Length: 296
Image (cartoon, rainbow, N blue to C red):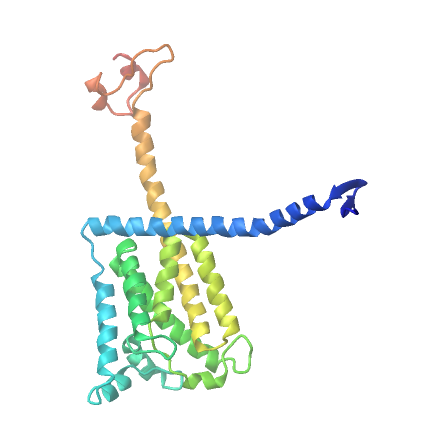
């Protein structure tokens, strides 16, 4: 019987070892995917733990709940012929409109439906993402990021249509007549900001990759606006994480000074000497000469 062998560097290798090596090579990407999934699950658990702590402290996501309820109410009123024309005139947005009209209708456009997102998806996005941002980031920061993310994505998309027509990196002129409604831009900005501030870097990478792929595959107004909102959310998240790091570093020096003010124990096994043993030391200033402190 002829046995298959692999001659590499003068040595003979049985076919069974070749199969084991191929199996291990195929198993490595699977292991990496599993490890990445576990890391992402840990990141999401950390965000949920922060939200639970804020919930236990008495904070409630009333703003997110109000947005979700308004989205459902507007959807129901659009099926009534008495309210539908007024609602569309107050929130229908496209780049073909004058800039002043588009800015005036922009807040209401957040609650109008979009062709590629059902109403329950829009309400769930607002309730979950904006709600977590309201609990973890704070209400006013969440409102600011959502508002400016929605505004920046809409205006930048308008500029991409008007300033560079025919360029592959920009949008075609026909995109000016596409309906531009829905909360996706605001939700994207708040979501990526929340992930960066919570230091969920692997989840942020997956979100960025997914939005890039969707923008390349379906090159249109929605994909470009998602990327623009993503860029704004990244800037807000980096600024928020730096602010949190600066606040932590400002608090640590005071703690280190308090620790250094208490003398350590001697090597010979003597009991620790601190303010409990010598009460007069707590009232003494650290700027006094060493000779005065040595008299104690």
